[in-house]
Image 1 (tube, helix red, strand yellow):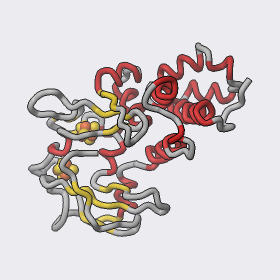
Image 2 (tube, rainbow, N blue to C red):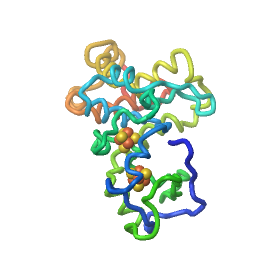
Image 3 (cartoon, rainbow, N blue to C red):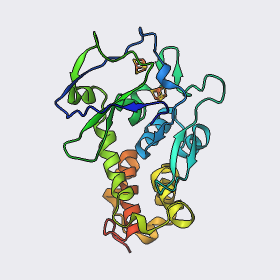
Length: 246
Ligand code: SF4
Ligand code: SF4
């Protein structure tokens, strides 16, 4: 997630404890919200654009930039820091995060970083030299308790849905960095309002038998819409039987 970070060699399971607490009285308050490489997941984008009451296209254009890294193999979206000497996150204020309830997954999970895809999960601790939240005198909690207080569960459930695409066994056989595969991946992962337009007012219903109850769910919940977009991508990118074709 960040520059100048280091993950501890120590490994923690969900029932292990660690000492950390963060509050506005610390001299480091807000220092962690600047000059960072903050990757956004599809569900992060959904939450943030909804919080800001703008479309996904407007959010992507105003607050993010894409990268196409060969080592990852698909487009990624990063939050733009303010382009001045502060390099602040656009959502940090003197009082802290202005979108706290809808902050991205990586802001929620700090200082814990999953170090593998194992079940149950194993974590390392991200150390940032200026962060005064660690150690002596700080509150000790289990990893499970900390994660509960940060409400990561729904974010991680949605991330798991996305991983069925990015970790698909056929992922490496296609080029997601350009052309039609890239466009499909970008639309279904990041540009949810445009995907909704195509689904409800456009072409997609000519090719898929979606059904009224599913359509109703999708129209009333953006989270359901994103779940549907993941199914659509698995169907059109990998030929999975996740949707009924007409
Ligand atoms: S640097 Fe650490 S302790 Fe300070 S505000 Fe950020 S997370 Fe909290
Ligand atoms: S989104 Fe909020 S918590 Fe995350 S870096 Fe920006 S201000 Fe900090």
